Amino acid sequence: MASFFDSFTPQEVARISAQGRHVTLPEGWSPIWERTPADKAYILIDGTVSVRKGGAEIAQLGPGEFMGEQAILGHSLRTASIVALTPLEVIHFTSETVRELCDQMPKFKTALEAVAESRLG
Image (cartoon, rainbow, N blue to C red; front, side, top):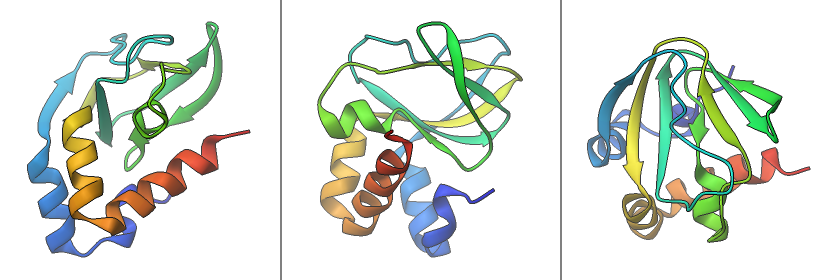
């Protein structure tokens, strides 16, 4: 499976990673809830999550996947919930940090928009 980081140089990966906070979350934890404000996003480093809409699973995401980007980019409420199926290691970003990275690194914004677009539909 492709990683969000695949299109970045090691220096860019380090810069992006340094902007976030490394966090470990337990199995069963739900870091993102449907119909809540877009105040954070995550890059999944290790583990698997279930993406749920109206309680039904619509996808699973694994290492290298970005989570929570759509609502931040769209300035909208969350369209789905995320539930940890395993213990997770993630990089946590505030919505402000995501917007700053988009402003400072056009390549980051392009990659994030590509992720969001691939999930629509």
